[in-house]
Image (cartoon, rainbow over all chains, first blue to last red; front, side, top):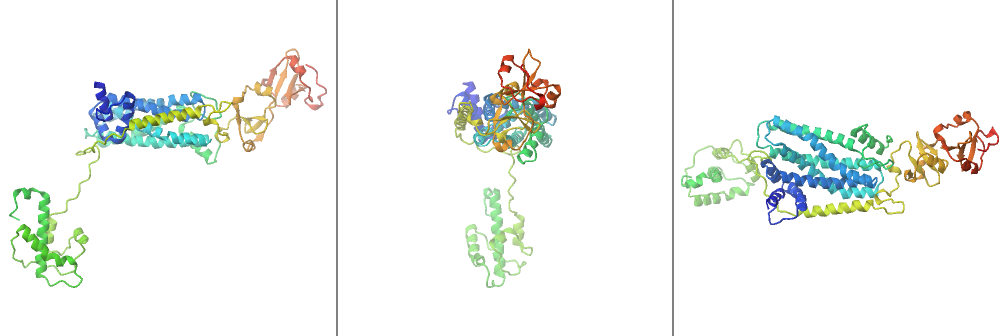
Amino acid sequence: MKQSSAMDSVIGRPQTERHGGGMADLAVIETILRNRHHFFIEIRDGVGLNEKMRAMLISSILFLALYGAVLGSTHSLWQTLSSAFKLPLLFLATLLVCSPTLYFFNVLFGSNQSLSQNVALILTAITVTAVLLLSFAPIVVFFLLTTAGYQFFKLMNVAIFSICGIVGVIFLNHGMRIVSSGGREGATARRWVMWLWVLVYAFVGSQMAWTLRPFIGAPSMEFELFRQLGGNFYTNVFTSIGEILGFLVVR
Amino acid sequence: MSDRTPEESTSTTDQILDLLLDALVERQRARHTAPAPRAGTTGSAWRAPAIEERVNTERHVEPVETKPAPVPVPRPEPPAAEQRRSVPEHAGPASHAMHVAPRPVPAREPAPGDEGWEPPARLPSINMGKMLLRLVILVAVLIALVNVPVNKYGTSLARILPESQALVIRDGLVLKGSGPEIYILDNDRLRWISSLDAFEHLGLTWEDVHLVEDSFLEKFQEGLALHVLLKCGSSPHIYRLENEQKRWIRDIDAFTAEGHVWEDVRFVSCKYLRDLPAGPSIPEDAGPAPEP
C-alpha cells in the first residue's frame, strides 16, 4: 500500500487509477511530459525520489534498448542484440561519469540539491531523450527497409540523436531552474555551470559512443562487439558527410 | 467624490475609474465654455452632454463652477484609439488628472523557478502509459519482423536490399556482379579469384561475398588475378591452378615474376594434382610440365 502510494506520487495520478508496476513505470513519462512543473517541484521537495528514479531508469532502459535493436537490425541478429544492450549502457555510463561534476560544481555555487536530486534531473533528461527516440523508431525502421545507404542511415541517426538530446537538455535546464529555485545565491553562476556541463556531457557522450561502437555495424564487416579504437566521433561524422556529398570514400 | 464609502475608495480599480470620470467631467466643462465644434467633429463630442448628465445622475456629483481655466484650442477630436494612447501636451487640467493615474502596466510573468511563480494546474491523465506500452509492443514486433529470415539464404527484410551503396570500401572486400566471377578488392583494384581452391585457400566463405551491380564493379580497375599454387609433399614442383588446369611454374624466377609469394602455396595430395588436366607452363616457353 505504501509502495503504491509512492508510485501514485511518481506518476501524479489519483489513487483510484492504479495499474500494474510496469505500466506505472511507463506512466512516469506522462507526468514528465504533461505535468513537468509538478514533477520538478516534487524532485525539489524530495517526494518519491527513489520511485521516480526507478521508474525513469526502467522506462529509459526499455526505450533505449528498443531503439538500439532497431539500429543493429541493419547488420545482423547479433548486432541487434548487441546494440540493444549497448545503447542504454552508453547513456547510463555517461550519466555515471558526468553527474558528480554537475553536483559538486552546483554545490560550489550555492546549490542545496542532493546528489540524488541531480541524478533524478539528469535521468529526466535521459528519459525524455529516450521516449523521443522511441517515437522516431518507426521512422527509422521505414528508412531501414527502403534505403541501403549506410552513411545516410548513420547520419540520419546522428541527427535524430541530436534533436532528442537537445530536447532532453531543455528539460534539464527547466528542471534545474525549478529545483534550484530555493537557493538564490549564485543562481546565475549555476546556470552557467549547467550549460558548460551540458557541453562536457555531450563530449563525454560522443566519446563513449565511439568507444562502444558499432551500434549500426558496417554491412561489409563482420559482427564485432566492440571495434578497435582509433579516430573519433567527429571526424567520422565529417567523413560520412563527405562521402554522401561525393567528396571522398570511406575506407 | 467625497460621498464614496471607504470600501470603494480602497479599490484601486475604483480609484482609477473615478479619476477617469473626473477627467471626463472636466473635459466636458471645458467644451461647454469653448466655441461650438466645427463640422467634421467626431460623434463623441455630441454625446458628451448626455454622458455628463448620466455621470452626474449616477454619481451625484455636485455641479462645480466653471473655472476660467485654460481652455484648449478647439480641434477635431482624435480617434478613440489615439486618445487612449497619448495625452496632448497642451491639454488642460483634465489631462493632468490622466497623468496622475497612469494605466497599470502588466507585470512580467514570473518564469519557472522565479519568486512568485506558480505552476499551472495539473493536467488530467490521458493514459499515456497504456499508449506507450502499445508503442513499445509495436516497435518490438517491427524489430522481430525485420530480423526474421525471409529467404532460403537466411536474409532478413532489414538486410535484403542491394547493398552496394551500403558497403564500406576496404581492402579484402569480396564482390560478385551478375557473372560467375568473384573478385577481391585490393588496393583499389579488383583481383579475380581464379578458382574455388583459391577462394577456400583465402579463407573465404559465401557469407563474405557481397552481391553488387555490375556498374559498381566497373568503378574499379582490374588487378592481377588471385591464383592458388598447388604442391604435393613428394614432388618439388609447384603448379598454378587456373581455369581448373594445373600450370607448372618452371623456377623461382618465374614464381616471383608472376608476383607469387610462399603464402599462396597450398599443399594437396599428389593424386589430386596428377588428376588435374595440365595447361601451358609458366613461362609458356618452359616446355612440357613434369608430372608431380
